[in-house]
Length: 542
Image (cartoon, rainbow, N blue to C red):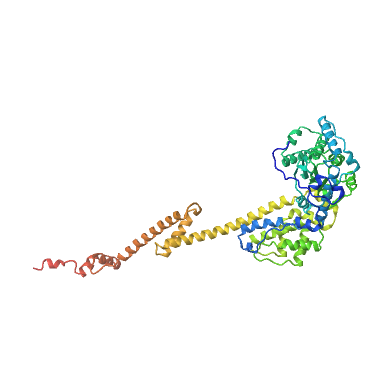
């Protein structure tokens, strides 16, 4: 049972090809697109304004995130869209809900499951092989991104209620994408299917079936649920994570994928790195070849016109204050440092701009591109060296030892670079703030205290004795004023004392006393000379 979720109502388009006509599942899909229409729909051009180059470092850091949104499809992406467009429609041909045979099969499938039995293969699918293919290649070349851009052309859930004025109540899921579970088990992959369906449709498949442990029990359930919800194509990404050990060995793993295709009866696309070559070999690879679609080995890009065109588009997104023109030397360096891996080229471009902005150089150079790649992408050096050597065994060996998670790795680098530069920036900013605060205190204090030396020394005392970050401006000013006033009062007292000391008029006794001490003379003689004492002879004169 679906919960009360609102899905888009199917809109039917008349089909030009006879095999696609009178099939509501196919007619509800978007029209088959031309290459130019596909390119236009897949292209993502993030916003950019040259005036943003004058924004603060912090704001430009946020602008830089748009670099990762930039997407220009190339030949491999256009070919991928054609393949997916074909296999979804081909897969629906023998699952037309209007066909009597389809309804009979679904009823038998349901009854078998209720009795704990394996549903038989759809007789129609015995006559027509289910299509599917694999996409294998090194990390970062755009496999998953390309798939997602193509899938965005299609709605993920549609609701059917009426077709040609007749009631037709069903749910259609044109595509479902899974990532291999972290435990690497095939059972975990089956459970991931149930959980994704629940998330999409509001159902409770996982809760209902989580007690089942055997993969050979879960696979038929997957098949029935996929058919019941008219799944168009199942995409399984990161298949290199699947564990041969937990799945019972290579043979069981191959059997699992072959059974997945045959049991579900729905096109399956498998995506993985070169490490997945060890999983997708022999019987399964041969089975895919038999469908007419085969495998799609995705390799790193060659240094050609397409590469130059993509780099030219990417280069427009410079948020440094002194943008530079992309010349042949810079294109060559970007290719050499990324080895034709588009995602890595974008990240080198991004990291170099971070360096240029936060270190204040504000300009991209070839030397900066190389140094940023060298400093921040050290863990990727073995893989890049393997690519440069052209030795496939070296590359496969490297991926076996240490698969590269570009996004997780570069996310860590982004944080590290930002925080390192942020701390330096904050330290400089703190110095500037302290200087501004000092100037403000001096200016305000000078309004009351006229002695500039006392003003400067009082403010200095405040900064030396208080943690200025803990107090507001008024508190700092009050302290500085108190210190300054004490210094002024002390200075005034000293001046008054110096002014009165030795500055006596006439025959001031204090003056005469100081002179007697200074000249080492008897105070009697000094007083006598100044007629301040009577002569003893005067007393007996009469």
